[in-house]
Amino acid sequence: MAKSKNFVCKECAATFSKWSGKCDNCGAWNTISEEVPFSSGPAGKSLGSKRGTPMALFDLATEEAQPPRTRSGSSELNRVLGGGLVPASAVLVGGDPGIGKSTLLLQAAASFARAGLKTIYVSGEEASAQVRMRAQRLGLQEAPVKLAAETNLRDILTTLEAEKPDLVIIDSIQTMWADTVDSAPGSVSQVRAACHELTTFAKRKGITMILVGHVTKEGQIAGPRVVEHMVDTVLYFEGERGHQFRVLRAVKNRFGPADEIGVFEMTGKGLAEVKNPSALFIGDRANPVPGSVVFAGIEGTRPVLVEFQALVAPSPHAQARRTVVGWDGSRLAMILAVLEARCGVPFTGLDVYLNVAGGMRVSEPAADLAVAAALLSAREDHSLPSETVVFGEISLSGALRPVGQMENRLKEAGKLGFSSAIAPSGGKKRDHADMQVRYMSDLASFVKDTFGE
Ligand code: TYD
Ligand code: MG
Image (tube, rainbow, N blue to C red; front, side):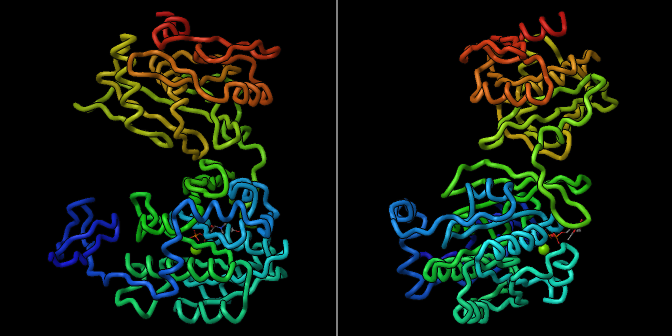
């Protein structure tokens, strides 16, 4: 029988049968280390076989005695959780170091404690005194939250056994270590073991567990993807360092819609909720600027308007630059190709920069038309009317495809003072009293219509 593979890359979790300096899978250097195969104890095994299957969800949904969700004081957080915290669930909150995870979770801990949950905040990164100082800064020193500074899993579980809390926050999963596993904290097997131990313990005891995880530069929760499958809900806390806005995004949720977002603002006193993100992302639109187009998007269940900004300039380089912030680079390449092939608008020899204002990240294909409009507007130095929103998916043939939730998009735009929209035809058309909608069937006619070529 082949010898079991026991060298694992910390970045991508690929396994190898021997050590090497460079990971063949993701190309990272010095990330491969020897890992001890993970074996769970008998208690873990019986629960483990049930996890990750539809069984658990089904059981939860039909269990009559199921206590209701606990709502925090933050409606943004509740929304992302799908309405509140589900008892005995496991939530993973990932994000770059320094983005504000500890701040968010300390505030959430205080909020849930005030809502009646017996809450313990376990910090493996800061001493209790430091967490207390942070709480003071956030004005939460009176909150009925218990603090523990601990990294040894066995000690933590012993404490939890004695304390019988309702909610436990582990900050962070990468600092935890099980003495049964023979590798350093933060390694794949330690993270996996810690996550497994904590989540199975929590399910057994009916405790809700929130785990904090750092994200690697590739955007994956470090140590690694396996952790995402062990929990019920995965939230990412994102934002640009220079911006004060933070977006908490549900990428997986067994108990609510995925892709739901909550928007926060980092202030001197912690994170504040942003109730109307559209107003914030589109900023001041008194003067139309070439290259700037407002996209009427949907994030989860909520319409959000965001501004796309493009800059197109002659390139001094042999190979023109394509730089994207907040959107998918390959999607941009596709739209440039469609503009060239189907509409006869070449971008050869031109540098293209595309940015989503406010540090927001958009992943909807419905933004295609807004991106195309921003690129054309920048290239032609011709601004779109400032009271217009744009949305629609572009296919490779240059046709515009209808997108979901047209009504909600138009309603949100109307609420924010926009009076016209450019939308794909083919969907349901309705008359809008205060919104003038131009329906387009293909990109070429949009180009002709708007930029008069
Ligand atoms: P932190 O929650 O420690 O981030 P993480 O746990 O994700 O590593 O937040 C770090 C940043 O947040 C830090 O740069 C300072 C800033 N911050 C504020 O701006 N206001 C505040 O009230 C707090 C507590 C932090
Ligand atoms: Mg932290």
